[in-house]
Image 1 (cartoon, rainbow, N blue to C red):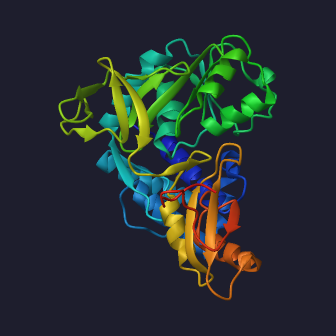
Image 2 (image 1 turned 135 degrees about the horizontal axis):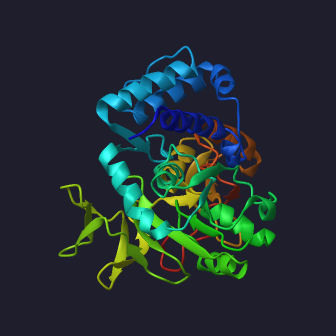
Image 3 (image 1 turned 90 degrees about the vertical axis):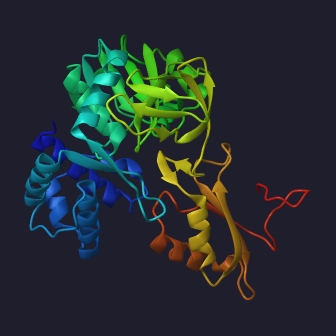
Length: 377
């Protein structure tokens, strides 16, 4: 059962996330703020957008509130009545998906993942709880272990040697762990870590063990399903949590033991042994930018609508180039690379920070390989 404080935490994290979409530093979503002041300082457009998001989280029409306190009280009452909340996908296409989870499902998942984290004394939370990953592992898991929770901004430059202690579980995401490795932070004895939201690189997992982490857990799942499986080491397949039933007749399907409906696995995957899977690619063709789902096809659609653009392609940068999107533009007659400024301005009004291409290349035709298929540039 959720408490009023849980609902407050979900709404305030959603508020910060809405504001962070217009900032270059996405990690600012984790900074502590005066939430009432943030709410009161929203522009009309920001207030309208946030009220729409809050309504969708609790499956209600958008409603105007005079204060953040009134909003929290209202949606807590809605939750008590319906016993359900919606966790939202990232909405990079402009139309996020609502993923309903009942109180029974929420509690089942918390108890279902608990055996993997026995012995944890404190959960160090670096992820927002309005997304299902953060909600499960920094709000519900500590409650069933039980363990205390210590909230921190997701800044790997902090003095971690002084902050962490034996028995801690650091709940973060791949980009955070990549920065941790780059900085060479050592782990105090007995500290565990975990990650989700996008695939971890095997070399990052190995490096974390080299830096002294006691145990690392990568969670595989989605907003629709919740946590499905886990692994500990680079190169391993993911072991499916025991609270899932499997059906392997035609395709990989699963359902929670408390539910009746079967779900298709959200990714293409290979089965290894009875309860081990190895994901090999997303079926929805999205990519991850700083842990956020982004759809290059949507960015192409927006970019192609500018009068300067005849044709375009958008894709994720190669690892050596960076971790953002890049765009290739074939300009219309009368336009050239000199007009990049107006194109950038146009895109900044249409796209989120994570969708915005970091680099632009201009050419007379889209790049293709020797057999005429699209290729990288």
